[in-house]
Image (spheres, rainbow, N blue to C red):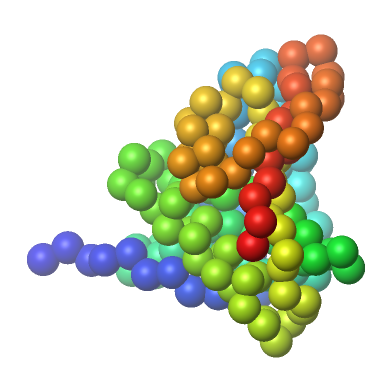
Length: 162
């Protein structure tokens, strides 16, 4: 019988697995934009640990393996900035990214012990990342801004009300 995927809050002990998964998952994004210097591929373990302490992160586990993750934080204006939604390539197209997005939105929409309640959710993705854009639009996000981040990359900012 197969194992089921469980979603839980990430802990400091998950940082190494998250970083390795992040590196694996962002290879396709780097290839898409022809840029292997993107922040998710250059982030250090210490930087990731600091990010985990500052905000909130979730992981999806298959047994002991972290197969997906998402993280974010709420600013003083009530904007939950959600980022680095990653799913192991072998686990994609099974709804796991949507489940994680729903779970982190739920966390920020209720009164979390670690911060303010979100009034809106915001995330960024690249203009060529059609899978990401399709998921976010399906989940109710709308484009609110586009910013040229480099010669090959336009960042698309999407938002929705909490």
